[in-house]
Image 1 (cartoon, helix red, strand yellow):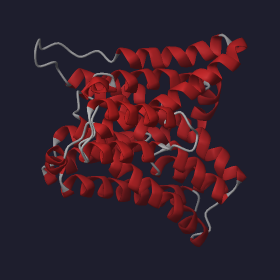
Image 2 (cartoon, rainbow, N blue to C red):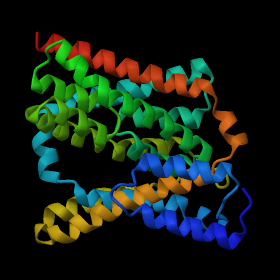
Image 3 (tube, rainbow, N blue to C red):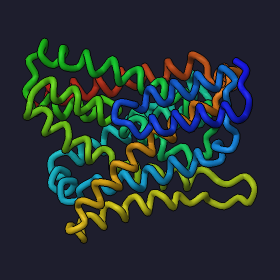
Length: 310
């Protein structure tokens, strides 16, 4: 499709506006960005803002988290989430080497599986200095498995007659993205939704230590220094601000909304930077990695949780 620079700019302007709409999901944004890129409709001026939009969105999303809820919930779910995060990350790195998957793509998929899907990938990508095709494919893998989990987890839960508490914990640990965790929990029951939401909140906070670990293991090739994930510190600070100054609740709500919508914009920009040649570099093995990790955490957490409640 042949379009001039002015037409491409107008198309991108319309899409950026749509990204602010509640019906425009992260999946739609990513896929539309990829579609425009494959059709040759690009806006090179916006490419430079991709990393910043990811980082700023992560910081703003921190205003939607409650430190009080995290501390309260951590009494029950901290150990479970800690074990699952370490287990998935270590397993992911091992499988990445066995399948000879691109190392950065392997880390992104592992982080998305271990913590909270797209948000974890978005947080780790700038620290890892990942390329657009690595981020895009990792997100596609996570989104596909999320969609599947949303439908089959409640069915499996009812088949095995899992309690509301057990299902909620299982969903929070084994399903990647927060939206799918909430969706599966709400389908299963009110108590399952409550448990899933609180445990998922703890799991999401592992973005902070994981980003720091990745930063310490990734050195800038030009000067050999550690690339500091400054935005992760601001993310933690935003959570603390909400706790220390509760009077600004309305403002925090707006900032959190801006962060969520900003993430949609960031995913669109990531998709718009991809190319067919870059996509081919990722390959089927990367999807196999994501699928194997998904099965691993899903089955292992199911077995452990049902055994504990037997």
